[in-house]
Image 1 (cartoon, rainbow, N blue to C red):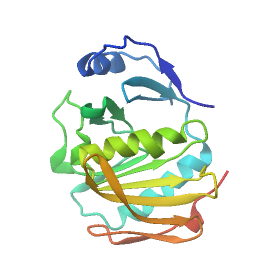
Image 2: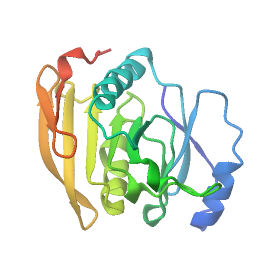
Image 3: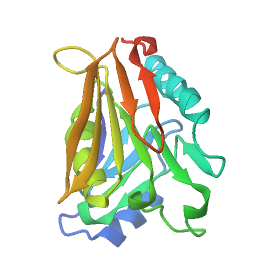
Amino acid sequence: MSALTVDHGPEQGWDDLVHTWKGMDAPEGRKVEIIEGIITVSPSPSWDHNSTAYLLLLRLATIIPEHWRIFQTQEVAVPGRKGLYIPDLMVAAEEDRPAPGELFPASRAKLVVEITSRGNAHHDRIAKARGYAQAGVPLYLLLDPWASDSPSATLYGEPEGGTYRMLETVEYGGKLTLPAPFDLAIDTTEFPVS
């Protein structure tokens, strides 16, 4: 199932988009994001999608500093790209917690992880990659079980001018290494493929 979009005026500004987003009454389990100025409602992730997020969360939890947190439903704001994303996983420091009622700026994330779904993989591969890069998120891990050739994991980093440098890519079955401060080898053989 693919994502649905919510119709809004073409001249709607960032504050209006966020106001509309906050007022959404989406069905439970749905992910409501703003991607390139369009409010998008996605279906609940699949069992395999959630399993992949869980397995990676377990690995990250063993190596991050005690004052860092791992989130699965934390929105991150990228106003410069009219984006408000909810990454599958995000690592951030507790001291970067937003004030009550404020959105979390993507620029404060240490790592974001997106796991593609069949219906909206292009958002993770293109729009969100650009948004995270523009925000200066140091590391973006794209787990892509729906890649056209074969399932793959790609690590992006060194954001500059709104684009990332591809640091490493492996087909599922290989190992990918998150650099410092993580220093974590991720064995992709454990990630399920639908």
